[in-house]
Image 1 (cartoon, one colour):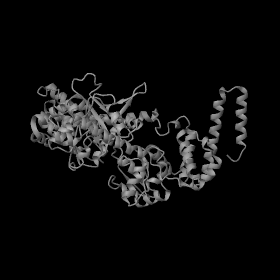
Image 2 (image 1 turned 180 degrees about the horizontal axis):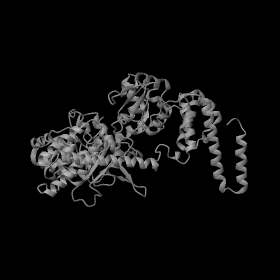
Image 3 (image 1 turned 180 degrees about the vertical axis):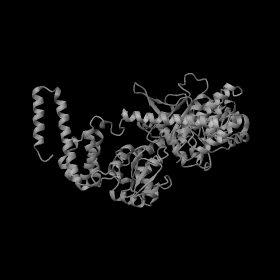
Length: 591
């Protein structure tokens, strides 16, 4: 059973969309609407629009949209039911969870239970005689037993079914273990433990739930099949949305968070007192992880490995963090060491000094540009200054450019005017190239695939009519009955719009208002955003019923054309019957 409509409406009434968004988005009034920088993607010009009149939002930049439940789900990484539960709790409404379908939440709770029991199993094995090999490794890496217990580190036995048997004894099913991704399935259909003879790092989210695992192979184990094995995405875990160590770091990171590359870096730095350290999880740093960081701190210090991969990761992280509003600084770890190695060799005091010497991102780029250039020679200086000019030309802030132009001019004995002129020419060239690209796009536009409704390209006329029909019905629900009588759902041509239209009719015949709180359960964030954009368009603002009738005629015509086109390859008799049916249908009614 769905959550009663009156309960949903009461929760929405008590959670005004502007108030809910206030901690995450700085909204400014623009006419009857509100605008701000989108919290779901990086942007400099506000494209995030809130429509207080109907309690919805839409971002013209990334296409997400919905209502207060959709926003809460996106910003807090929750599904629909969890979003409703959270907002109900905030507004003092008690939900009777036995009265509605909560199957997904039950599955999630089961996976949390499996993960927690799995973490206990791995930790117990680590601390047993059988896990001595793993404990010796961790202690040999400089970790204390208290740190090992603090992070809940563990070890997976060298067995194909030890975990399966343990979880079975606790009452968990094979199907749920598989959903949790703690076990795998062979091509022959046999189930096996995913993690074997590995040091285990449980991944804990900010709410304190064990959501996943990262298993490190022992050094020199050539049969391990990769240094790390990580949990794949599950109903409770998406690696791009989480950060290792964030569950601890969130308590001590109001001013600064240190972003490192590996799990061991995090554990070692926390042990040394730097509990504001986190790491990405088996993936490049993502916008979702950046969004998570913005909730907890003002500044990010990037301290990634000094190798080529680390430097590439540093550049990517800097680009992603650029428009988050966070201050970004970079630490260059001496001698090409990673943070774990450095702190063990030099201690916490020198590591703290290293942090204090963190440079701005632009200064880091200027420093690394000189790494392989002999700036003592004239040719070397010329080469470096050209590279530095390129870096400064990409810097939009004129004051920042001015400061570094002065520094480079003094250090390398080149006139300020010459350096400014060089940077100005590069900037002009970049602007010219951008204009050429825009002109080429106008003259010979590149088709961009509609990710929300990819069939729109194949059926542009039908899709436009479908969009108008849906937009009108969102605004004029009194016309749904009229439309249902004249347009069966199978007359919708594109799959997405057919699905949406079917949901509209289903809600209508169930006597339920059709709104985003209802439909967002069945659609993705992008699809919900698509609906919000239709609802807030000008379609149907005048002569809605007449416009609706025109669109129904277009769809009927497009269906006829589609049927005739499909009949080309039919046998003569079948084709004649098909044509007769089309003519017969066209004589019925007005549409």
